[in-house]
Length: 419
Ligand SMILES: Cc1ncc(COP(=O)(O)O)c(C=O)c1O
Image (cartoon, rainbow, N blue to C red):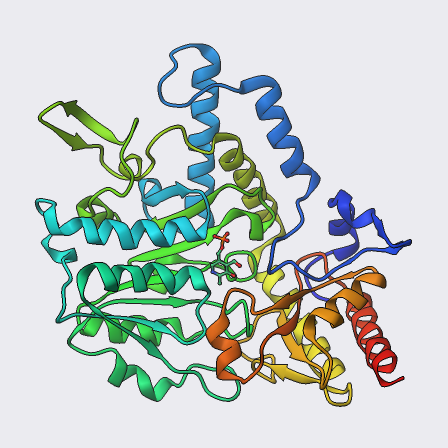
């Protein structure tokens, strides 16, 4: 394996030393949520034990230490995604909130002075893809309902890839927003970002990338991606739950109306009206997720020290190893690209005549944690005519031995059901 010392990495994750049902845990559910290295746990404990205070308001020492720790986390995240400006990093609760923030702020544009560029109405169209997570479908459907805009999608082919020939037709002069996933959580597909962004820009549409599954696995460079917004979530990238990120181009954020109102997002409040703080604070109403953001900063440091090119190379090798091993199981159907090209380390599959939940439950008896269901991307299941899939997803701590254990486990499940 190149680049990463996986055995050393595994020692950083205390949970990986655990047993489940009397056997060592094989954790293959990182697309759902990742495990956390000790340094993230320690950073959060240290924050609460020594520096805890509210941010941006207390003048005492702890208040200033907490504010520094919180704002340092913003710097770290900005550097991690190569943001040109730290004020482009908005902390949210998770990816879902980041995506909702954009959708709701856009609908607030109808009554917000200076926000004409965001106004959308019945003549306009919002485009997603058929492989989106519900978090990148429902906020746009709701926006379409609020504004009368038409909701459309780019279709996917039998191999789980975007039908690229549809891009120029579906994204057209009426398109106001194109929101799409970088790496699919249900299929593993990595989408042609530049191609989609270029088309969206050529028709003047805003672009929103859901990078929830790419931020932990691929080098993420918001400038190279070229979109207006990029959303991701801390708990999938070895950080804590309760914190996510919306990156937005500064000039776009600066004109975007607020989403939630409250403390810290204002410039001045009068009973006759309010003016708003510049980004990022305009979008961070109330006390933020301070310890969680600080913990995310530690996760970002951890990933940066490993090197995201190394992370991507390691996971690419895992997919190259896993795809043929799983495909060799008789009857197993991979739902998603059959090759490792432009594909992340998430593999969904079905077994004939065995419900995916049964597969996951029986694998758990062998200590193997996978997810079963529609993975919050139900249109994908509908597209492939299945009610659900079983999904194994890998990360920086995954080994080929664990993939072997998965394949053995799947064989055993099949044998059990054939008896
Ligand atoms: C592609 C994708 N988008 C969005 C989300 C939502 O993330 P969160 O639940 O942290 O908001 C997920 C989580 O599974 C995801 O995989």
